[in-house]
Length: 295
Image (cartoon, rainbow, N blue to C red):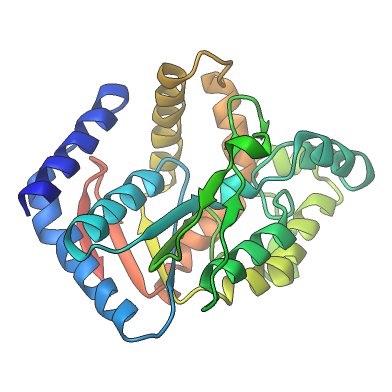
């Protein structure tokens, strides 16, 4: 337990050095992370293969941070081998998206929405990670500051069979909408730049097909529920500030972030109203702290 506290507090300290101050750190560990991991551990023990967990939520909600904390607890207390990665790591390359923007719609040049990920690569990775007969694999990595995929030599190498896989991403588990719900634009981006609904329909169709196939592989789904959409914007701005401190490369301005979030807005808001179909819901308060977990 002392080793867990030490590792956990060290991780929090690193996060605070580039971002916001964490609230009630040890209380959060005791009241939420430990009992939650204990429940997930029991689920893992009940099946004879790796447990594939997804963790979704709006931009800046803390998916990567919570993923790392869960990994720390699983490693320290349960001695499990945990593999973590994001759907963001499976974005199509800049060149692939450039081609999409020419033959499908200009908005596909911007990474983010369903349709801008390499679904075949992602599906194969999840299948390979959950096989009983495990073989070492490499998981791609995406460089957000460069808006392109890292070279293969920088990819995450998985040489040991995982016990638990945490697959996080803003749109993981998202469901398609009905056609009539797509017609009314949700923001100025859709109204002005997607007048014929070409982009919206393609995104929606991707959720019906390629992404649905991927999401069916997930054993248990966790959803981070933010207080409301304005906190998605606020916390995503904070995330960019963090990225700016970590990297010397070009990052987005406040105006660019606000436009960028418009690409995500429809799916994000739809997930926020349709969150009850998840196995676990983590409610966050306005201070970015875990308020409660619903099983």
